[in-house]
Length: 434
Image 1 (tube, one colour):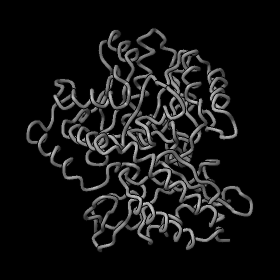
Image 2: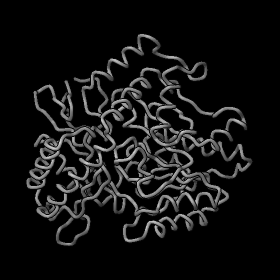
Image 3: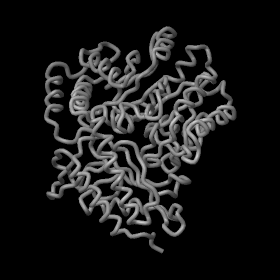
Image 4: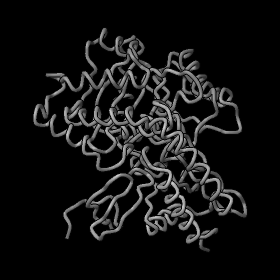
């Protein structure tokens, strides 16, 4: 009997080693990590220099509490990260995971308005579907019905107004204008922030708005005195072919940027937010402290991992590599779409890519969800790991697969990934079982 509390009743193979884009289990099976775990392993597995940087930091200074000390590695990393992202005056708040980072952003937005004398601002506008994390505040902000349902009694729903997801049939500016109606309905004087994923991740694989969307969003937020928070936990750090995906369609600077996953690329728990000078200054000039914190925030060993990962991303040009390899994957996915009618659409930015599955007879989502899970299971049998999901249409219907291999995947490894996915689609077939 295992003493592990597993995430579900399914059987889990035991991973024993990983190198590059491959993971090996205890039975000797190799899997191409086509989703980087959960779009985390941006630099690939088994990078010895990251492990060495962590070991050196642990030997020198393993832990200090953020209420008592800073550290050299945190100061260095914050400056390097801000420069890489093109946010030179922003301040970095480090935590251990994306849920903690979005929870921090939500609380920061609330305190910011309290310090400004607008204590009536507490609502956070988000989109449906969306996913911002598993902690209660981040989950309340999320627009994923299946994940929220059991915890709904713990949430004050009116505090979390929802906006429709991006509509590719609209121009970016017209699409963003829908935020205005949501703010007016909620009472703009009660809204603290608008929070969105620039490129949607788990809830609606790789859906992105048209160019101009985020610039208009930022403009509307300024008009109403609402903070604009960009959740780049999945899409940032070069994953979409740019340091920040929010800037793919224009020069946009949110008030708060949330990061995770690719920060330490799976080598250590690391996430965080970057706050603008106005947000940071308002909080510090008010009560003098952000009334929030976690024990392991700014953990020196995790930050050392992040600094080493950033070195690799910049030295190896992995942001640019994500653009090149992403174009190759997207072209290959278009080829699979032509051969497999159950693939209704493919899309993505850089190496954050989505495959939308549905009924080839109607061109709509399957009546019953589960096809994405079956394709993912078939792909696993073919030695490929993917990230399946459902619920993008109405909370239940809407099957899709998310793909996001390490940014240093080679062209030949891309071809292996596409071939395995094609075989998996063949095995599952075009229609759901009757």
